[in-house]
Length: 209
Image (cartoon, rainbow, N blue to C red; front, side):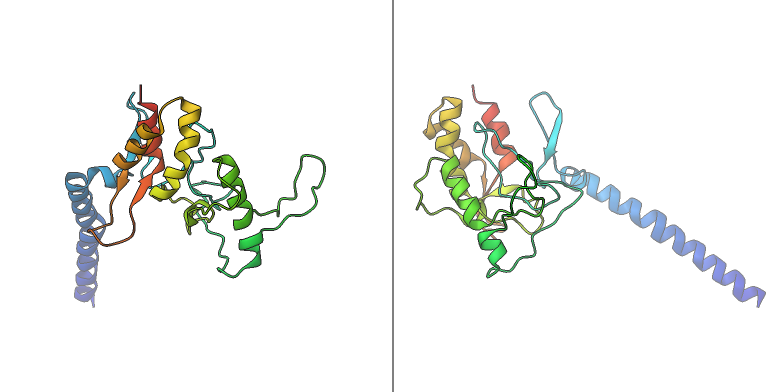
């Protein structure tokens, strides 16, 4: 009995050392050596070396002189502690037409109000000076599953270029070049679609003299 108990204690200690000590240390060491950027959060720094965000998380840019990310349903929008989608199906009336109730009081809309695809498309066209019937990319008027998708489609970025160029006083041709430089291709050459990281693009935009 005592011998079996001693064997069990030894096995437990060995496994504890392997699973809770050596294995995590090896994984940490390999990740720091081979994938340091990714292992530390894929952080992005500005020209002054300050961390301004992550390649993996969207931020809510709203000023006209910046490219804007896709809409978000994470918390009040782009909240990394409340990653979430709408969970609405493609035929949902709420998803398409939204929910708009009478304001609780002047300047205080009902918290259950929700902008649908129709509302987002109208706002996007107005914001970017597009015709009322202009087609817009789907990622410009739908929220991602996480609400934190950091990328938009090249088509979305190009439609925003005129607004940004006007606000910045620079040429659209220059902006199209920046968009192309900050467009990543398909994974492994065939997975997914080309995409533009909004934070990286806006940092490159700020660096333009």
